[in-house]
Image (cartoon, rainbow, N blue to C red; front, side, top):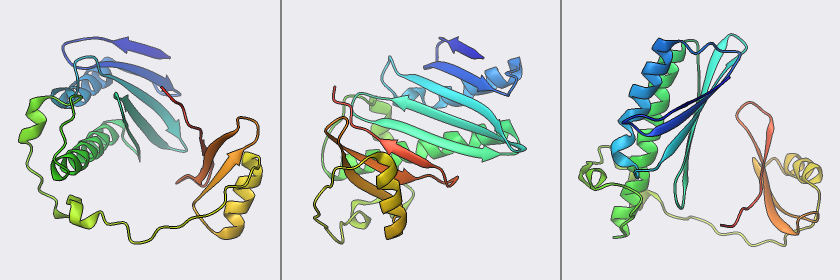
Length: 189
């Protein structure tokens, strides 16, 4: 079931699978996602996916912005507490991203001025901790995504970069938290 809501908060779309979206849940989503509204550009839209997975509730929130995408996923027994947790995760992503911008003395028009006044309380988010320790160079081999997954498993890595011969583009396969696999394909705008 899909719901689309536009109100004084950020626009959002709710997609529910095996979950009933009650008025109370929809109101709570509006309030919680609305907390992020003050940091976002005026036309930001959040995609909220609700689903049930083995006696637990999963909530995924994706917020596409101009040059980046904010995304978080949380599993919990209670949908309301999962919603609280996911907003905390998204706020941390926003603070982390903003600290990087501040450290590099850049300004990003996608965020409103209120975001500049945020104080970073977590010392682990400073640019001093974001040091590239090692750089690797390697030849990118053409192979199918299934072959790339096998190669990744043989190497014991959590991701693998390869050239997809069907699209002639560089792709990445990765292992997800639930032990399934994901594929990243570039999309140029």
